[in-house]
Each structure stands twice: as C-alpha cells, then as structure tokens.
Length: 356
Length: 170
Figure 1 (cartoon, rainbow over the protein chains, first blue to last red):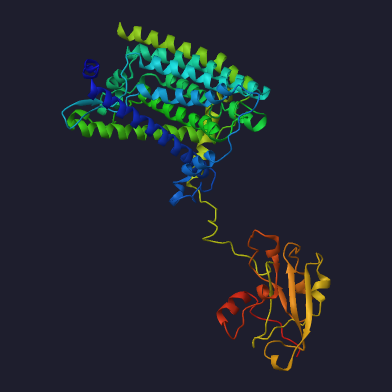
Figure 2 (figure 1 turned 30 degrees about the vertical axis):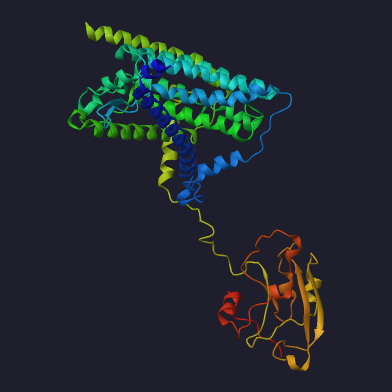
C-alpha cells in the first residue's frame, strides 16, 4: 500500500487535476457568456439593445437564465427509456467538454518551485485525430436523446440532425488532410510551435496563408457541426415540429442548449489553433520576453482570437436564412467533398512542384 | 442563377456587410422606466375628479357621465351639502360616493365630453397593474385631484397640460 502511494507522481497528478478544473470551468464560463454575447450582438445587429436589466449592462443575465432553467419542472415521459433519456444531454455535454483536453491554451509557465507546467492538459501526438473522434461521438448525444423520447417527431428530428453532422464530418476531415501535408504532424502543440516561427512575429507562417480554401471548407463544416445557422435545421424544427429536444425540460434541456455553445467555443479554439497560430501573438517575437509573461500574453491573444470567431458565428447566424434539408445535403456531399478533394490534390501538386 | 450567385458567398458577404453596418446606426430604443415617451395633449389616461382654484369639488353628481359611459363603469350616490361645508363643494348637491370600475372602463373619454361642470377629465397617466380585481374599483379618494390650497405643486402636476380650465357658470 505504501509502495503504491509513494510511486504515484503526485506533483504531476495535482498539476493536471488543477489544469483540468481550470480549463473546464473556463469553458463553461465562456460558453455562458457567449449566450449573453449572442443576445447583445444580435441586438446590436438589429438596432436594439440586448438584455440590460439583470445587473449592470445585463452582465448577470446568463446566471438568471441558468436559474430559470433549474427552477423548472423536471418531466421524464412515462413511456420513454428513462436511463437513456437522462443520458442523452449528459453525453452531449461530455463530448463537448472532452475536446478541450488537447487544445494548447498557452506556452509553458514556470511555477514558483522551479517546475515547468505546460498549459495543455494532454499533449498527445494524435491531437487532431482525437478531436475528430470525440466530435463523432457527439452524434450519440443527439441520437440517444431522439430515441429515448419515444416520440416520432423527436426521432425524425434527431435523424436529420445526425445525418447532417455525419455528412459534414467527412468534408471536415478531408479539408484537414491538405493542412497535414504542410505541418507533417497531428499534434496541435507542434502545429502552434511551427506557426510561431515565421516572419513578423509569426504572422507569415500562419496556416491561413498556406491553406485559405481549406480554412473556408473547415469553417463551413464547423458551422454545420455546431448546428448553427445556416445549418440549424435541428433547432428550427424545434419551432416547427419537434426535433430531438421536444420532450426535454429544465436542466436537461439546458444541457443540450449549453453544449451547443461549448461546441461553438471549442470549434473556434480548434480553428484558431489550426489556422491562425493558436496562442501566437502576431507582431511580437516571444523569445524576447520572460517565459511567464509570454505565456500569459499568449493566452490573452488566444482568447481574443476566439472572441473574434465567436463574433463571426453570431454575425453569420443573424444574417443568413437557413438551408432546406435537401439543399444542406447537396451542399455537404456534392459541393464540399469534391472541393475538399480538389484542395487536397492541388496542395499535393503544389508541394511537389515547389520542392523540385 | 449566375455563377456568381451560385457560389452563395458573394451574396452572403454582402448581407453580412449590411448587418455589420447596423452596429453603427443609432438605436431607437427608449429605456422604459428611466425615460418615457411623451404623450400628446389629448391622450386619454386615468380619470381625475377636478376642483376649482379655491379647492371646492366641481362634481355635482348629476349622473351624465354614468349615462354617457358605454361600458357602464361609473356609479355614484348623491348627497346634500350641509351648511358648514361650503368650502368643500361648489354646489348644493355633491357626490358622496363616486366609483369607477377600471376593468370596465374603455378610456373613451365620453364622460369627459358629457360633464357640464368640467368635473371629470382623462389625464396623461396610464393604469398601473395590480393583483386583485377588487382593487381596480377606484373610489372617489383615488380619483380626486389634490387640493390646491394644501398641496399646490401636486395640484399643478396633476392638472398637467389642462392649465387653462373651462370657466364655470356660478
């Protein structure tokens, strides 16, 4: 017994547990304030103020929304599969948060005891593949919820949502293959380190300059994965017929809605990491600063970039009408996949040509 | 569709430009409890039972407003003015009980048009909300304008923009 306790690397374990707690709570808080930012920005785009009554400038509005959802009645339909019914939202939230484990939030910091800590929970060398695997598991959250509701409208809505997600996952993966030809590695940390090396403090080596079409395809597929307009059929059907969260109330519904915002946040983080240099600060050469300062400034720069992407998500949502289901499928299979394949072949040809 | 339209992207970009420009446009929202929109002078709000400049109630309980009211919201009981009460009421008959059921009232202003004594008019405020139905039957005390002798500012404020009153026949 004593031998086991002494052989565990306690500092490592505690460091990782603290990092997990911090990252998960930051994801949840950012997702909460994304709901608030969405309402405020929607108001700005529509010539009106957003919510500004709960607390100064409406800052406490997400808390008010959360409390409202908690206080509603928990209804579990009698003829549903109760265990699966409760499991659905949990799965959706779990897969949304699990992806944040491999994103590099910053460079390393040096703790007071002289110990170095990486600001990334797990630097696996198959980083991006892990992200895709977890996103694919996200389909389960929706399908389990749709099936367990024992309601034909929920089932149809859930089927549509699931088919939308799996269609756009293909184009997502294909658009990345061209990027991987440049980076040569799947690890997200390595990609960010490579993007820091270029001229102008790293700006010239950001992958957006090497893969603009790939970025565009990734962006469109990320919108589809998060069920955001113009691809928000699963949500629109809630207004029309049912959709997979008809039978849900109170916090279970809150989890489904909230997991969409966490997914948005994580998709933005992944896009920034892959194409916009992650925690790299554009015109600054990080080697000139102290290690801790560089790390903290990097984290701040990362969040600013993520905020720009979240603004883009919200801006597109309140501008464009949504696609019809057949238009969506047509776009996913007959336009996005050929475009991604073309991108891949063009990139391969360009690399071979310029390396000769 | 032209090739430019088929790509969706130029049209989307143009639409996004339009939405973006709305961020910089002026916001016509009025933040309600802090600021209110001005009403016109003929706005029909809550009823007020008027007094003259000396503080005597104008209403003589003639019943014309009750007859004119399309919703039958007004009821009243008359009483005779006793010798010691000349400073309270203008004429020999006054309204001992005067009630308006605000839930029936449609704020049409016929009572104001029918009154021969300029005793009732509709002011600029609108009805506050409440929990019980019984509290919506406004009694005479709720409707009377404040006494100009005791509270001149409240009187002036309640008069609002009816500062020039109709002259009374004595």
